[in-house]
Length: 160
Image (cartoon, rainbow, N blue to C red; front, side, top):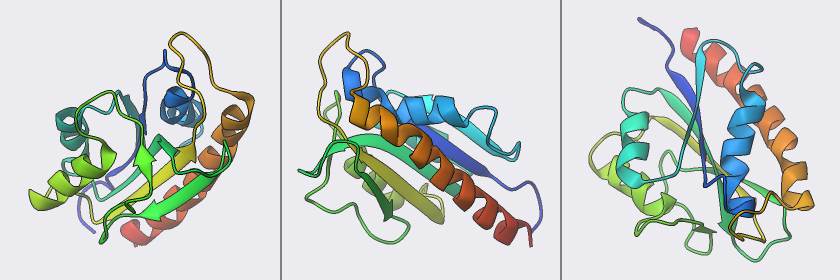
């Protein structure tokens, strides 16, 4: 491969809305732990901003809160490189469009990286001014460890 390996983790969420902040918390946990070749970013999830962050990446891991009916803190890994997010998975958004729509728009305009994985963490509380609930907070480090392992494997493959 020529040029730098372009890897990123993007944590999505509102830090002032309880479990909605989980994506940003995973990004915070990864800072200082992720290899230098991987950028660790966060955003509120506004679709145009998210799509701009995807531009030029070879691989991305996106972390966001979701509501699917699973137990709070459950971690779902979804490879959306070639398929859409499942319809039963609702990510939490304060915008008119959610993560699923942003991913499909990025795919339609050829801005979705070839390797794109979403980690959706089941959330339970979104009260303004609250912090993560204990079950969701417990998922932060585990999600971070899973992403670190994937960064290592994918980064090595892209460099080879």
